[in-house]
Image 1 (spheres, rainbow, N blue to C red):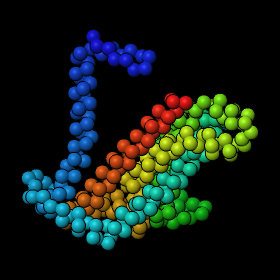
Image 2: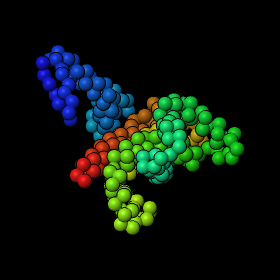
Image 3: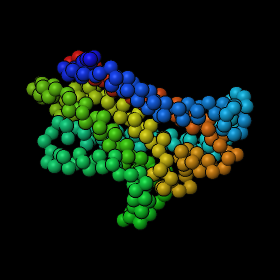
Length: 279
C-alpha cells in the first residue's frame, strides 16, 4: 500500500486504485481539451471545411477574420463588456466580502447564499429572467451591451466573492488591531494594511471575471439585441458553413487568451498565498 501526505493528513491508495485514478484523470484531460486542440488545428486549415485530412496549413483565415469589420466590432464589444463587468464585479465582491469576513453581520449566511445563487441557477433561466427584467421591469433598460454587462456582473460576482472572501478571512486580525492601536483610521488601516495583502486576490478575481465575461454566450444571446458580443456572433455564424472557417481563428485567439488569463490568475493567487504564509 502506498501513502501520500497532504499537510497533516495521510491518504492511503492501493496500487490498483492509483492506476485507476491516473487513467480516469488522463481520460478526463483528453475529453476536456481535445475539442480545443482540434479547433486550434482547424484554424490553420487551408480548406474551407473543418475536417480531416487537412488540405494544408495557412494563416489566411486569420488575416480575413481580423480584416472583417463585423468580427472586429463584435470582438471589441466583448472586450469592452468584459473589462467593465470584471471591474464592477470585483469592486462589488470586495465591498461584500470585507464586511462578511471581518465584521459581525446579521444574517451573514443568508447574504452569502443570496450572493452565490447565480452559481446554481441555470444560465438559460437567468437569461430569460434578465430579458423580462430589462424589457418589462420597473425601469426598462432595453437590450444591448449595457444589459449584457449587467448580466455578466451577476454571474461573475459569485466567483469573485469566492476568491476574495477566503483570502480576507485568512488575514490575522491582530494586524488590524495593531494598526488601530497605532492611531490609524478605518480607511488608513484598509489602505495600508489590508489592501496590500489582498491585491493579488483582487487581480485574480478581476481576471477570472473577465474570462467568464468574454466567453459567456447564453445570457448574452438573450439580452444583446442588435449589439452582439463575439461569442454570440460566433454562435449565430455557425449556421452558415461558408463563414465557419473565418470565425474559427478569432475563437482560437479567445481560447488561448482565456487559458493564459486563467493561468495568470492562479499564479497571482498562489503568490498571494505565499505572501500571507510569510507573515
